Each structure stands twice: as C-alpha cells, then as structure tokens.
Amino acid sequence: MRRSRFLSPILSLLAPVLLVAGPIAAQAKPAAPDLKGVDQVITAMMAEFHVPGLGVGIIRDSQVVLAKGYGYRDLEAKVPATPRTLFAIGSNSKSFTATLLAMLVDEGKIDWRKPVRTWLPDFELYDDYAGRNMTPMDLVSHVSGLPRHDALWYGRAFSRDQIFHKLKYLEPSTSFRNIWQYNNLMFLSAGVLIERVTGKSWEEQVRGRIFTPLGMDRATTSVTDMARSDDFSWAYDYKDGKVIRIPFRSLDAVGPAGAINASVEDMLKYVRFRMHFGEWGGKQLVSAKQDSLMQTGRAVVPGGWTFQGVPEMGPASTYGLGLAVVGYRGHKLVIHGGGIDGFISQMAWLPEEKIGVVILSNTGNSGGGGNPLPNALALYLMDRMLGLAPLDWAGKAHEQAVSADSTEKADRAAELKTRVAGTSPSHPLDDYVGKYEDVAYGILEIRRGAQGLELALDDLKTPLEHVHYDVFAIAPGAPMIEGRLTFGLDEKGAITSVSVPMDHSVKPIVFTRVAPPKP
Image 1: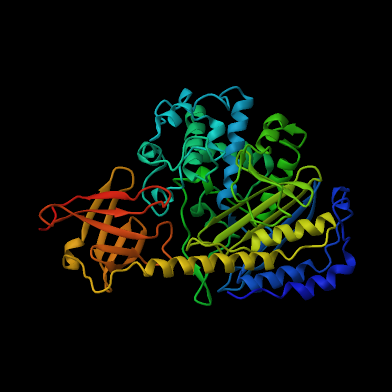
Image 2: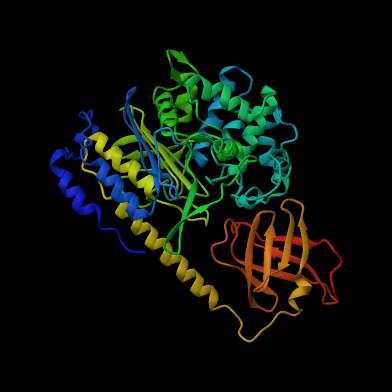
C-alpha cells in the first residue's frame, strides 16, 4: 500500500485562508467557517481511497453549513449521490439504542444501575456473576467481559431472540467490568430489553421515538426497506485493484447494534439533537441529564479510539453510552463510526462549540478491513470548522494501514514457518465432509469444493487450506473468522470433531460431529 502524497500540495494552497492556531488559540471560539477548496480535497480523497460515493454534512449550532452528495450512489449507472441518499450507518446505530434506554430511564421504566435481570430474568451469561450484575449501563458501554463473538450473528440465520438465549454459552475473555472490549451482542441484548419493557419491537421504538420526532423521514432499520427507496446507495468494495459492487448485508437480527440506514440530511438532524443535549423543536425528547451521561466517558478505551498514538487525539480515549468521548486538539470530541459490508460511516461533534460532522460512504469492510476515508475526512473538516491548520489525516490513515498490513504479513510469515513439511491428512478429504455442531454457534458444515475442503456457517463460507496432519487453515480474507482448524479423532481413528478459532481471545470452539463418523 503506497503512502498518500496528494494532500500536501492541496493543504499548502489552502494555508493562506486558514487560521493557524497553537494550544491557546485552540481554546478560543472558532471563527466563521471558511470552506474554500473543500470540494477539491474531498474529491481527491475519494480517488485516493477508491470510494465511489459519499454523503458529507456539517452543522454549526442549528445551521447546516454543508449537506452534499459526492460521486455516485450507483457507480455502474453513474447515478449521483445526493444529500437524500441512504447509506448504511452500521455501528452508529448504537447510540440510537442507548438513547432509547435513556428515554426509558427518564420515564422510570428502567434504571441504569439495576441488574438487567430486573426486567429480563432470562438474561444469562457464561460468567454467572456478570449475568446477575450486568446493568443497562454496562450493556451499552462494552464492559461485559465478552469478546466480539461476531460469527454468532454475521451471515447467520439465527433470530434476535435465538442469539439472546445463546449468550450463556459464550466464554468471556476477561472478567466483568475489567476492561473495555467492543461487543455487538450486548447492544442486541439492550434491544431485547427495550422490547420487553415497552412491548414493541426495537424497530418500532426507533421509528416512533427518534426518527419521527426528528423528521428523519428517510431513515430505515433494514437494508430491505432501504432498497425500496427512490434514492439509496449500492454497496461497494475495493478488491484486486477494482471497485466492485457487493451484496447488501442484512443486520436485522442484530439490529440494535448496527442496522440503521440514513441520509446525510437525516444524520445532521440527529447530530444537532445530540449537540443540544436531547432538545428538539423546543422539547426535551430525552432529558439533558441523561443525554449528558451518554456523552461522558465511562470506560477507558485501550490504545485509543481512533488514530492510535497520535498526540492530537488525547490525552485519553473513553467510551460513554453508545458514544466515544475523546480529547481533540484541546477540545472535547464525541465521535463514533460504523462499518458493514460496503459501507463506512462517521459522525462527530464538539458539544461545547456546537460543531458537528457526518460522513457516509459506500465503500466498506466486507473483508474485515476498513475504508479510512470517513474518519480522516471527518477530522479534516473538524479542523477547518475550528479554524485550525488541518493535519494530514489521510496520510496518517495510510501510515497506520501500512503498519497494520506489515504486521499482518509478518504474522502470516511466522505462522507459515510452523508448518510441518511432508505431511498429509490422516483420512481422504471426503471423510472430513459432514455437519458439526456447537450449542452456541449451531451447525458448521465441512464441504468438498473444487480445490479441497470448504467451511460453511449459514451464509458465511470460506475455502480451507491444508496445513499439516489434520490441521487446515481458513483462507485469508474470510470475514469474522481466521486461523487454523484442527480435526479431532477418537481412539479408533474416526473423525469426531473440529476445533475452530471463532474468536482469538478465547479458546477454540469444539464442534462435535452430528452424523456417525467414518472409521
């Protein structure tokens, strides 16, 4: 991956119109925004990061400074993106779920600090202490002790309720409230809590309590509904030097963690609502007390929330309730991103200065990586709105990507050295074919493909490569799972199980063969 150099000449041309500020000036009230040359910078970033289409929005106080579509929402037909174009916002949905909880706290229907089992007696975790003491506040601040376990929902056929009742089988990687660990399943549980307390679905609650009051008329909670819109973006990825269209990824089961789709116009309304601490149209949709609590750091994010090791993103990164809270060049910044196949989004605002930015993009992370443009562009625009000399955020994004790529290659090379040469499987490949089952993850199938064995977990499919003996590796680039599978044999030599690293922070999951094994 090459290092970006396109920003340097652009920034030098813009320098005369910027207020270059030191630490003291950073605290001052920002001057009126000067966005001269922003379109050129955005267009250059899109070309550099291979992004077909963007929705970009900026708001200051209650005034929209910029709401614009760039590039294409349909690359093949050359249909332009507009401020109305719907994009999947992924994990930016999380703060909507936390907001619903805050509204229920205002109404006295739940309490942030009482155990979830007060309302959900069937909420169970592998760690019984965590299950008995988990609170609604814990659910939406990523301190459950559970690692991601994303292969339980990504591409799977399980319903929301089925996933909720499988939580008790998932091993934690650390103790309850010990450290911050990102986890989508606890937000799913928060959605279930909302449904039980209100008697309505999470989807109905989001529409009725947030979308409708804010006038987010185009926002949806399903890609199926998004695709019925008259103005929506297709999903794209950049692979092997080409931008390609990819299928939508349904997140209906895990909706409270990431299923919302919205336009820039919609999201600017939401950001304005957050910057004014729950007030909209002269009414408090959620109390300022609860909204402030959401925007107050509760757990330290190890390594930093974004652009790790960059001094401007300090002194510490924290997580509130569905939102990250960080220091940014002498200011308090509330920020969150979201990503799912074909889409990456970013929203950020400065609560004290009442400046907010929204970036929606249609190039995403289907392979588990990520398109850095929304994050880099959001911070660049924040610099411009603050009247600060913009930092080369695109360059920093490239540096981190190069570092991550180098680390990945080194890890892969080290793993290859552990292979035992000259070995072969103990059985013909057809003997490994069959169904294997785990109480949480369900049925895993080993199939025979044209090039060898393949693994399938519902819609999650990937080729396997023989490593040595009865050990096979998941092909590079598979979403959500990676590493080596080990087939287990009984005392007669029959294949009875397969161990799969579903999450590397806990021990491999052992799937037991369903059908009688071949001797």
